[in-house]
Image: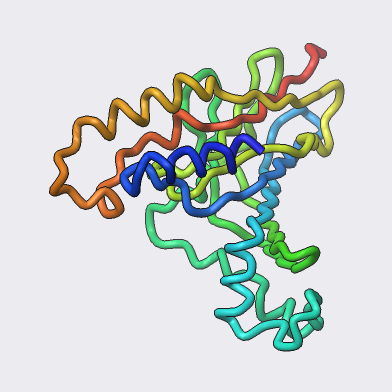
Amino acid sequence: MWRMAFLFSCLAAGPALAHPHVFIDTKIEVLLNDRNEATGLQVTWTYDDLYSLYIVGDMGLDPDWDGKLTPEEEAQLSGFDMKWIEGYEGDTYPLMAGAPLQLSGPRDWTAGYAEGKITSTHVRDFAAPVPVGTEPLVVQVYDPGYYVAYAIPFDPVVTGGTGCSAQVFVPDMDAATEALQAALSEYTPDVDLEAEFPAVGANFAEEVRVTCAAP
């Protein structure tokens, strides 16, 4: 709910603050082996109604507008958001002790359409198994340019491992909004903010923290 309220407040303030444009609810599943090492993540994205409608219409899916896709249409939809340009981090940022961890590109992706929303999934592998103990494995989700707003409304899942749990943490929205306004105040009126929007997305990042009990 805060995301829509924030968007409306930005629009009311003028086009310079009209970010974000797309809203994605995210679910994070952390994959662990029997040594409590994280081997990968399964990421689920549920797109907002408006963006979902745009994608379905643009791809010529659901021509009868009954809100359901045939198996053939689902196969066509699958992977629509997996054509990543070089350098794109997938808006998913794992950290351990503050240090970034490397993830592979996406694999085993799926997509579906229900209740007016597209939901897609994909799996990404860590470059090397990541030991998880009392020091949390942190997984942040955000778009650096804040064109897309990510939230984690779903309970995170830990698959595998022993004695492990995960929690969601949210940022200080007041502080994030103040940082956004401060960054925007540095731009002159002749700057195209859509092309040069400041990289403030990390301030709005929600995150999952995973810990495992000591053996």
